[in-house]
View 1 (tube, one colour):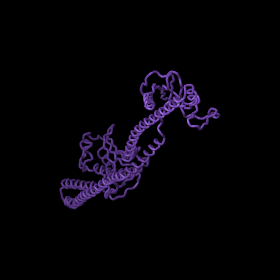
View 2 (spheres, rainbow, N blue to C red):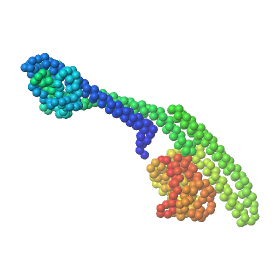
View 3 (cartoon, one colour):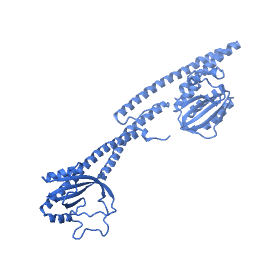
Length: 468
């Protein structure tokens, strides 16, 4: 069986914690990216406003013929300046980025006519390699502030916002500006790295915390399984958080009370069955003194039935409560040996278990349960076959016969104590009706079960299923 980690408490707590952290980081990152983009946009717009205002003030202080020379000397990749007799932008400031920049320029240059237009264009990325031999124009230094070289033609293209401004310098003289504002900036890698590290740390922390809860719960579940399989003196470790400790303490108290109650019931049944042997023996001795042969035989038959009932009741009380130690044995060998012994006493049962099938169990109890199934098959079905094999996570001892089977409405009652489906089988009336109840008690004490069903081709099948 494949173990799905998300079906465990630890796996689910780690998953829920990581998902919650990712969602919180996603929301925080979205807010951060939005605010960061807005801040960078405002910074870029403020930079354009200040540079345009500074350039316009310089050009206003110069004569009209000098203005062209001053504009040609400006080296600014992001902004291009031209001086002309007419504006390159139609009247108005429109909306968007251009409108905000135009209002900023107007605030710093009162009584100045400013027109603006906003466009989305493709431009070369500023991140490109400097080629060998490339350099600044004559008389310019590569490290000179304000100098930025034109990118090569094969530089990557990105979308950017282009703002066109027309600033009136004087009558018949306009400063035409084309400014490229950067597009959306990628998220900084440091933020992503911090998020990944945080998710890992939180996941490890959640795993450690859930393990502190999951391990005591697993121990509690193991103790519950042990108690359900018939083990006595089962104690769950008391550890972990207070809630789990209280649950373990309550389980231990319940297991102790249940053990005492079961022991009292078993002791009472043992004592009752044992004490009945003395009066039964006395009745047998008195019956043998009866001179009438037919009357003596009828009384002895009743005494024999009482002895059988007493012995089987005692066996049912002991089922699953044996002090025998568990051992890993070959169930196929037990089946072959048992069938050989039964054949020697005239029980028609054969073994079909050629391959070794190992299982941990109490060997004598399993042999007793298999013997009960075999005797039922021989008694009610005229004979049977005992097979031993593996089926998934179970080892199966299957005893099948070719008898008449059992009425479907009686299948669930077959393992009940003292129930006999005689009319559905062979009509035999002997037996106390405890054989299947004993087999079921032994199977459940080993953590398994007893399966009873009619065979599709006729007959009956009793399967003793034990954990492999």
